[in-house]
Length: 77
Image 1: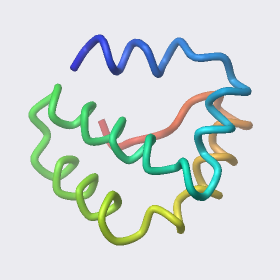
Image 2: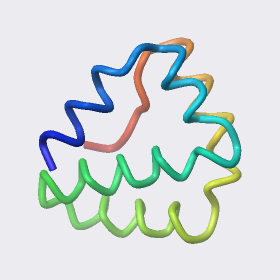
Image 3: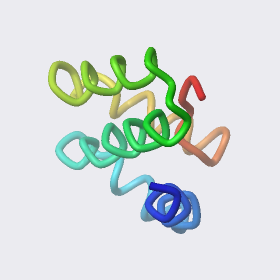
């Protein structure tokens, strides 16, 4: 898990933004799930699964905005 998290954290900003586009945003939902699993955060795991299954199309805009402002995808961990 740590390798996956480190890989996504070290991607160039433009690649992160491309992965945040509506169809590809599932990648960031999996990233959030990996982060929560790595930290054994039960609330984060549940939220990441809900985001992965129900509403990945909603969060793509939030992901792009946070990538532009903070330069990373935010999560509750």
